[in-house]
Length: 507
Image 1: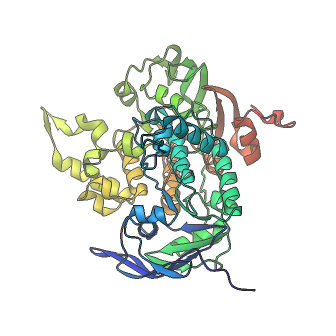
Image 2: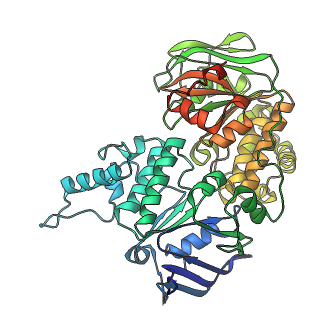
Image 3: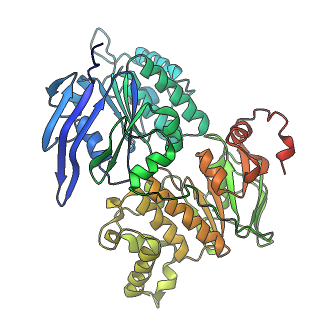
């Protein structure tokens, strides 16, 4: 039997930036009809490889082969002509355009007169969304959609051009469990029809379920080629970091019986409907639920971003009014938002300006800010949280996702917050940074601080929570001890599927 020719192949690809060899003799084969996982920690060279295959940048040396023949991918348009579609982690949608316009942007169908055929474009967009089993109107303005829905529009753009090679960079970072399973089913169908798929993700449990083969990068080099690594989490983690890191979810149990925050029957104009939660000192309370269930909206209500139309919030047994985020900050409540790039960071500031932003008064006397004290405090958090020392000199847009996330958390540590609301805190960061966040959660609860954890990663939610409150339609349907739940239980509870005689677990 003849050996199958790779659809795409890298032969000794090298790419250097000033002071950094991002890709060092990369060799990889991408076969038709296969989902190939490309894995590694942030900074290992994955993004550089993706940009090279997408035509965004050119390699310094080496060959790119298409069906066994050397080719040059000079720009993204050339990549598109070769049948390559890339869904980058950073969205490329135009928020003011409709879903249909975004799906076919740059490739809009034309009438016989050369004008845009709007009706056909809408019908074609509806067909793509139906194929994905996604219920989004093609007429919806994309900027009004949730982060997860915008991600699905990005994926629809790739499917719309009938690509033979699809590159997915963290495609499920903003998706819930149902949306992930729907996407995975679609990818399996595309794989079975002969499409080659390059799948990049930090969610290793998910990778274990979906990929057929993996290539692992470390420090710009291939450390495990396809076929050399078993597709299971422990093998992958050890290859990525170069050592056995031990427990993937290093959970500590520090919850007490003391109630620090209570929300009773709260509602807002933005999707919260009669929700009630109870948070104890030292506890990690997980909020579980599908995309659009209202988890983030509850977080915004507890942080004063969205005003209550009904209900009461109690802090240490006393009712409080949160008219704005400033009221929440003064009450010791912190929010690490889902989208740290748009809602959590000042990208033109260094670490210092970001860390002290929520508590400038503590550095100011008679209207004058003590810059030396700010630098000393910043250096302390950089050492304590093991943030890259580059954060002292460079603006945060040059830092990895994991370092950015630590800086957001450092801001609230500096403000001496007592309650931390973490909305998707490990989204889009590598395994090493994830474990650092988990250990930080343990450190917070160990000193008596409390955490509300929102995560679409069910394994993470189950492992790191003490209690899980299941959110549906903006309200809390049930509250369950995390130790008494399985992954299947949580899926069923989140999607309102009967739990098959498991009601005895509900507390």
